[in-house]
Image 1 (cartoon, rainbow, N blue to C red):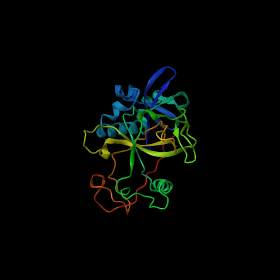
Image 2: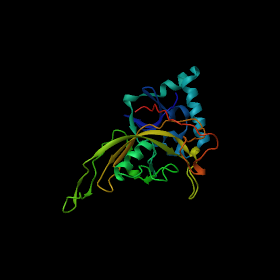
Image 3: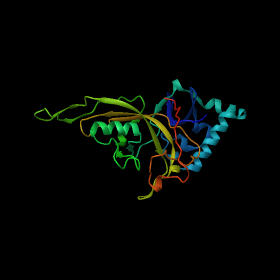
Length: 257
């Protein structure tokens, strides 16, 4: 009950629609909430409704799952997880990947800039981000193909073309941004439905093939978020800061896989 993860599922005799995972079952939200937005094959329409609606739905789902008076409504709408086929929970319009882990960014810096400071001067003000390809975000379980590209080692006489020789997987935290913003308008934290655990597949080359796939299947919901605080030694810009004494923050994720 602490995260109530949203997902999109279908069964042998039904089209994809929105549900919430509870244990080893999926609650069909289109059935229990009688709202056509949850009969859609993605979370996008619900995401566009904004924080007030997200909070109201979360409160209602919590009530349905905890109050005995709603048992007769809830039980017919529960689908065993092993009978549900999971789909990508949202249509990705765009995404940015940030080097937001100090340890990861430091390790990369030592690899690319040996003998120099591992972190660039701007990193503790705003972690480095790079644009990703939305088409590479897929539902968990989708095969991720080893990418092909051009490479040339220092000892090679000429470039060669072929599959990446190194491929790894990373556990990452994603922020699902729901409501839109206008050009030049900062993305407020209240526009994020939640954090989502994701697996990111990365290569160390060839160029242009660094992120062949990112996988996700559930999007945990959170209540209205409290303002974020930064650990000592970090210096975010004003639009990313929260007044008050700094404190160490930690995200605890128990998102089902």
